[in-house]
Length: 274
Image 1 (cartoon, rainbow, N blue to C red):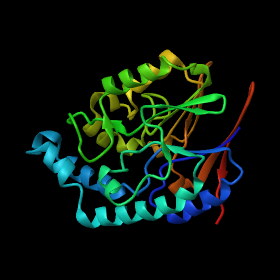
Image 2 (image 1 turned 90 degrees about the vertical axis):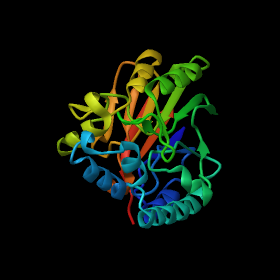
Image 3 (image 1 turned 135 degrees about the vertical axis):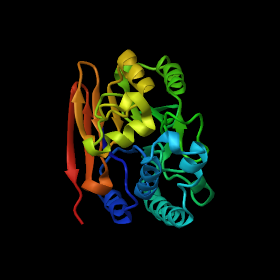
Image 4 (image 1 turned 45 degrees about the vertical axis):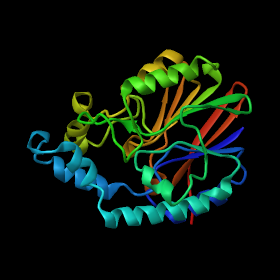
């Protein structure tokens, strides 16, 4: 079975077109989330947090409401609508999850072009696909009405229920975020920002999900693919699981190709050419 995998498009419509043309020979295409470019929102949050959490009067309002400027939202919405329209031609073999930049508001203007894997089991030939949207709550959040987010207990409980119904050795787990301390380390210059949003767990730059880490160590899926932390693109192997951080196709112009056969696994990152 031939798979094409990518994530974090950064709003690049030309990259979406190249992916469409380069995936014709794939049996399935898997997306790990984040269609628009989230940099403007990250920049605003970094500026807000520069003075420290304790100096922000209303954390929820200033970090959630005030970091969604209309101009940036309009641009991101246009990116999402155009890219979704392009990628819908990958159906019916297109599967994916939502990233934290795939805001709920976009659903008013477009529909997601892939079979949404979130919190469900999907059969793909001899394998199972299990997916989960979004990112963990920031340390100061209890909910977030704008972004796909989750608590660590929520993702652990939800995925435990799903994994109890499948053979993990034949399961491909698809998430937007990495497990904690597995291909999840941000650039050193971003550690201060990481700590201000994710708290103590990010003191060394690791921003992956703690609940997700418990899941993969307990159930040991055959393959776990994700993105989110662009600078940690790569492959990490254990005796039971292949972990792949796809990085950002919008930045690297690289997709991942995986060939799965009985007792055989082949993976490579392939550069897209315009």
